Image (cartoon, helix red, strand yellow):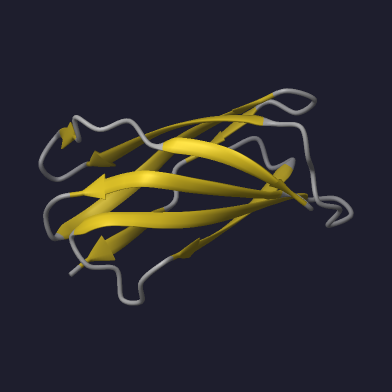
Length: 102
């Protein structure tokens, strides 16, 4: 949101299907594309058209090299989903990547 970080999201399934997924977020500095480690990510899956999220809290594990693995990502129905993500640590920001679930 602030324009200081760049976040790339890769899902375990393409196209993503309803159910339990994994995602990998790669976080780099927007200015020099350097991977950023040591961050804490809090993620809330949210379905904007339905005005609800899920009852399951995703788990985020740092993998090094600016990569963060998200497990327990339960997207239980088809439609547009957002991953409302707050980043804290050496850099603070937020990002809401979105995608369609089949």
